[in-house]
Image (cartoon, rainbow, N blue to C red; front, top):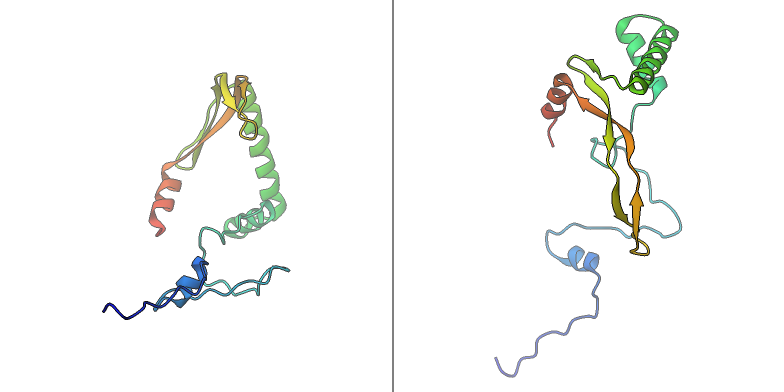
Length: 146
């Protein structure tokens, strides 16, 4: 209709406010800038909520599963670490069937770029470690829903 005016935009250009006002859209609360928001109980593990298992948790879990003392498991893990370090130093490849493969690889020299200044820099050649998951780890990862 020619004589009817459309309502003016309220001047609010915040995307969050527009989404919250949309019917069926997500409702988001603004968090106080002074500190973290209220803690909520976890309902499921998502990509940003994963907590890595530390060494002591791993040792106690293996000790419980294998029914051996935790000190024994700790010494076995220390021995595994020492052997992996020695094998990588010698240039050998270590393969634990179904679990993982660890090997030393060489990275060639290349030219990089400093992201702050944009200037080119020379990155020297280096040795690095390559860890490849074995079939059991791959199968376990693929069985978890995304």
